[in-house]
Every structure is written in C-alpha cells, then in structure tokens.
Length: 147
Image 1 (tube, one colour):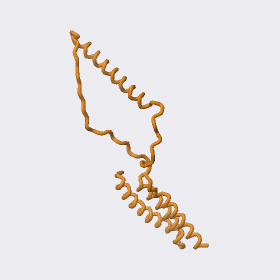
Image 2 (cartoon, one colour; image 1 turned 90 degrees about the vertical axis):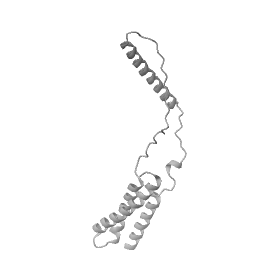
Image 3 (cartoon, rainbow, N blue to C red; image 1 turned 135 degrees about the horizontal axis):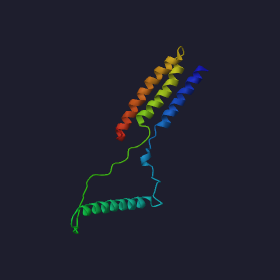
Image 4 (cartoon, rainbow, N blue to C red; image 1 turned 180 degrees about the vertical axis):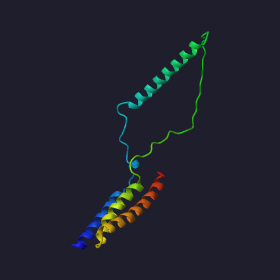
C-alpha cells in the first residue's frame, strides 16, 4: 500500500509539472480580439474633439487678455521617434508558478517519503523543490525578457 501511494504521488507530481510547463506561449496564439464595433475609431474621434476643445479654450483665454485681438496663425510641427510602450503581461511569472508547483509537489513527496515525521518531510520537500522551481522559472523569465 505504501509503495502504491508513493508511486501515485510521484506520477501525480510529474503530471502536474508537465502540464504546467506549457511550451506554446500565449503570445504566439492568434489574436481573436478584432475591433468589430469601431471602438478604436470612436476613441480617436473623441481624442481629436477633446484636443480641439482645449485649443479653443486656450485661444479664447489668450485673445481675451490682449487689448487688440489680431488674427494670428500658428504652425506647429512635432516629430517623435519614441515607440509606444507595450503593456506588460499580467498574471503569474514563471518563477512564481514553478515555485508554487514545486512547493506543492515537494510537500506531498516529502511527506510520503519521510515515514517517521511526515510534517518535517513535507516542509523540507516543499522548501527544496519550491526553491528549485523558482530557480528554473527565473531562468525562463529571463529568456522571455520578463526580468
């Protein structure tokens, strides 16, 4: 019975680890969030309208303070070489995910292996495998450019 429980826990840990190690990142999957309602166009229009309103208010305040309102023309040119910032991924980092998986499976394996004191075995297994999972996940995060 004890060998069976040990083998079942080892198999379950391996299955959990394999399931968590997804080799297909979500960024490689096709994007399905196309703009079908014209929200991007609406936001662009709303931004242009707000900028025009601010310009009118500024021009009115500027000409009201002058004694003689003379029509003037202004030209403005702006060039930018900066790229838009990409939103960071949300959710668990791979280091946190692998540390949690390692700690959970290490706790189970440590409790099963140490027959005299299951609590101490579980704690030691959780610390060892959790640390190993963190180190492995941190290297994966560095490869992905998250850190």
